[in-house]
Picture 1 (cartoon, protein in one colour):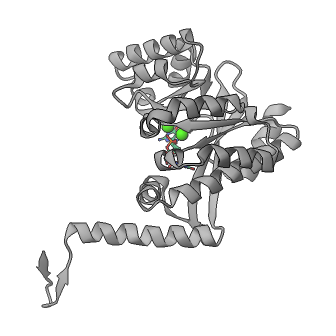
Picture 2 (spheres, rainbow, N blue to C red):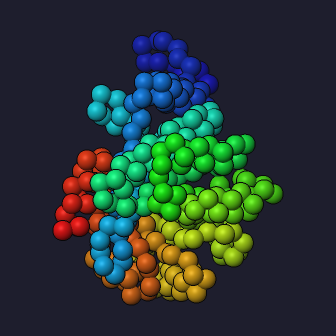
Picture 3 (tube, rainbow, N blue to C red):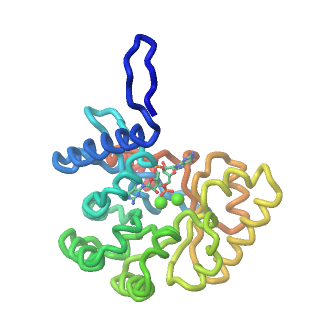
Length: 277
Ligand code: C2E
Ligand code: CA
Ligand code: CA
């Protein structure tokens, strides 16, 4: 579509090519960041639902240029997936998170670290070998590592998925099913895939105090997961009311702004000192 500009210029601005230009720019920034070591991770506390203390951290990617966040993960992760860059970025994030957890472990804080794994990264031949190499290289106790996989990731793995998941668990690494409740197959997946934990999607948590049906479904999910011996982590907990509901419903862990937003490693360490005293 050619649009006639006010002052007579013609510019070519169909929606498709605008989108391509935006994602092209994100791709450039990502490539630059990868090459110049400008990606970073922030850490969000995961707390014990009953005792309230920090038991783990989720590592979340950030893309900063000159100290400013230029794109959010919701903007750059899809581009990284489309361009295949997610394989290198995901490997970087995994190694970085393991190094950080190893360092906390050395300092007397055996904090479990959770790392997100995207479908393409998981499908990539040699995923297990890389994981194994990173564990050997960093010396992190594998029991302190947890991989967060979505239903989409599990689905992308094909026939070998269950074997791969078993192998990862045999290495001592924990697995959790992320964004639980969003997909269509969630319930059958829980029976099918060998995971240790599930994370209840933020949208459910948001509505439990608003909507009786959501509250009932959430309670049922937690009960079922617990009867299958899985940990249940609620995501996006923002209020005391939500927290109390989830604790009473049997959630084992919680994550959300109520307990702390994702933060730089140094900030996270301050929190560890406080909770351990
Ligand atoms: P996710 O794995 O579901 O991560 C949780 C998201 O919820 C994070 O957004 C976190 O900042 C946000 N969040 C946490 N607590 C609260 C809360 O109380 N309220 C609200 N409104 N939000 C909360 P973030 O960091 O922007 O990441 C978005 C998504 O990008 C992640 O969703 C994940 O799918 C993806 N992502 C982030 N880092 C990585 C990574 O290293 N690898 C891969 N493959 N994906 C990543
Ligand atoms: Ca996650
Ligand atoms: Ca999630």
